[in-house]
Image (cartoon, rainbow, N blue to C red; front, side):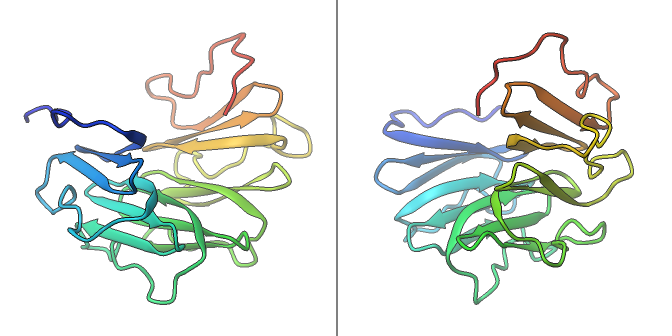
Length: 215
């Protein structure tokens, strides 16, 4: 498969995002540029798309958050991952999992749609106080304002098990989160990193002495 090449002359970029085989760039003027595999239209940015403030890339779909708090999606839609709920608004952050999409609203609540066979789009009832979101292959996470993490979706390899053993009362003091195929990461306020889930390639073996990390 040909490797994606950054479009010649691309400049003024303020944010980037990566899908499975495609890439996206957000420019300072609020427009989006995409390149790479386009089998399902994941790099076919809507012609009239503008005023974008954030972008996200999934397996074969793409998301854009506009300044007015609405979300635009394009690409493969076999599980409804690009079927943005009609009444969705006041969004402040977006995340794209493999075949699911997640949005964080200004009131701290979370909305998810798309593939849900492992519960990855079933946001826990009562979830509030969210300040950040991320989504992996079959799981999603939300960081709350109190520094705790809420997870949902597949837990076959532990990716939604918040590691209570790390902190006796549960994982806390978290300031940033990230999710990939089958593992998740949490950055704590003291600059340390907590990792969980599948470890077939050492992806959750945080190197000894890793401290001083910043979001």
